[in-house]
Length: 419
Image (spheres, helix red, strand yellow):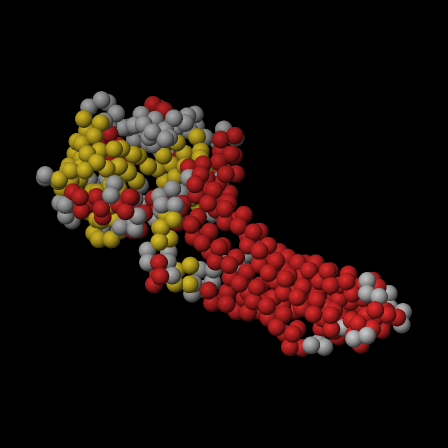
């Protein structure tokens, strides 16, 4: 207890220097909290936007369907699957919030003299909005009807290339599953603006029953079922369970968002790995400040240290009193940084930080990013950041502490007197 009391009292012998050091540690911890909070916000936004637009959290395909997306590689092979499979999965696995079927086809679209290649996506207009958001990007026009009626939604870039107008006709020509050339006329119901130019230039969405008719596919033959989970980070576990437990029909395979977009998974992992580097770097600078403060304190107290050691104070008591002083300095800095950081996070986590004036529309990994970044707490990283700052500061003070503990009392008092 004696060394703790000495450390606390010594802390306030030079109040100005102690407050400056505490402010430096507080500033370092404050910026660490903001940096971790912003990284968490960007990471969650990247994951949400990367999976919610079209990808979903888990997809079911025929084992040979990806990456070529063959017309004949439908779920369950030539026999197809039970159309009620989506609902059965929702009931069997509580983590699944929603499921939606899709059919894909590549077609040549034309309006008069204008034509362009496009990927036709056949969706269930009632269930698709439960798993993804690309139908919510409807810019003009009306959504698809729940019943198949020959309507089509075009990406903004594709509509401009085709010179398509609302209510106008778009002719589609494609290879059908029976070997014939499938062709039909769709009525333009709306224009989609996803914010991603490469998507808007090829996107054409129709009712999945309309696309099955065009491709001459029976109703039980679909290419994909997209699942939405309550926790995207459980996608790998659910994929493994679906594939291992024979919960799926024959010739149906599950893949998580990480399997389908490994770049997105790697990028999120990079966010995680960057925490340790940044925390360590800032802790080093904070420790250098503590080291400078304690070196000055030991230099100024040489005569005093020589006196108390000559009166019987043990070297280890001198050492631990200086370490205790450093501990209190860093702890108070961390506490002050947590208070200021908490105040800032309460605002930035609700209102967010608007970067639009500097960066405009942002996209990352082919994913549209909201220019308003909402910070999020990561309590585990915040704890380790504070712990690292305190530990680094105490370690930095070990150098002057050992130096003080090894001072010769006679030489220390003589040097202080200038003898």
